[in-house]
Image (tube, rainbow, N blue to C red):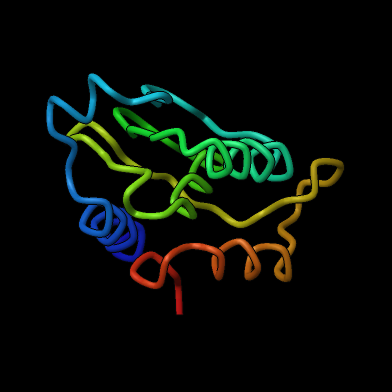
Length: 116
């Protein structure tokens, strides 16, 4: 539990907070995203990166949604309502975790968010 809170705090410190102007100008605003397929989120994040769209985390951003943390710092921020929920990657066909895929995802986050 402590590690989860540390990860959330690290992510929020890394991102800073959004000001009113940034929220008004955001191209993508996450208010409640439970996540989903990591491959689908990799594609969404890369599309946002390529387009330069800014992402504001303004509510829960869980599971695959956390991959937005891979964006450059000037392209993402979180409001006081923003939060992140992490878990091990699981194969969509089976209920058990995939350690190699989990490590790959965690290593793709910025250093302040990574699990050692």
